[in-house]
Image 1 (cartoon, rainbow, N blue to C red):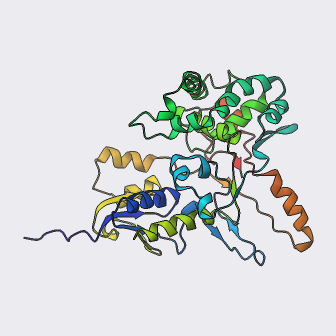
Image 2: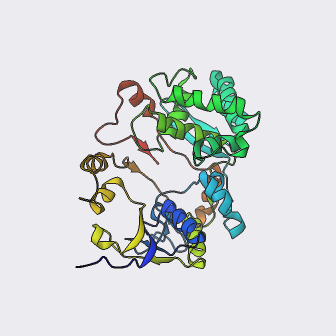
Image 3: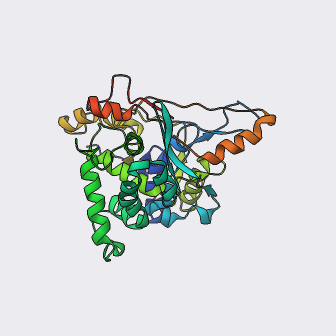
Length: 349
């Protein structure tokens, strides 16, 4: 009679993106033995910073660059990356949306400057996003709390205004009535574009909640950019994980369950399709089909310019303007159809 091999570790985490590393750090700090498996030769997933060989001493964030939640999320607030040496700079502009035949709409870190640029919708922006931004801590708790308890911050009179407004805006933005709070293309474009950071069908409640959260943070702690690249955040997570006995194995491809070492628990920080492959025949058929049907990421184009030494002043001037995500056609797609075109969401980043 054969018996299963004893677990080598308590927990195996497949994937070393920020979510996987955050889970690994939490579990290792709880005293569990943790092993992280990463298919790439470098750690960090979408938060990696690599030298692409474009210029000496220049490194690139290959995916995420601005990190609104690196200072605002409950996990990173407790982890305190700044106390661990990560220096993050919040640009004057959090995000922007180019528009046809008119200047781009810009969500400045400064609320009043943003409202002034939105013209007729300035008062509505102040009354909605501005009100939420004044109570940013409550919005973060409402959006990212563990949903198992009521945080003390929510047991205050401020919640009587913030929670209903947050819920009402999600309800409006997540339904065909998404355009009611604002009258102009500029304000609608700002919220539509920031909602499109979440992958899914628009309008939807999930994407609407994303817009409310990120839009609020844009006028709160801002959308900070880590000095030296996103890898600086990853490196602090890795250092803490190893300090608590965690292990990281790179170049380890996990294609099926046989590639996962014995463990008491396995966490997958992978795309839904990859999870379906790894867990093939181990899940209810309906769940496996749902994972395989789950939409993949939107196709995006990212343009990076690397100037010679004589242009470095221009680089510094450009960097101060901050990041932007261009989603000019988003509103048109919201009006015409509920699903993205075959080529994916028309987003340029």
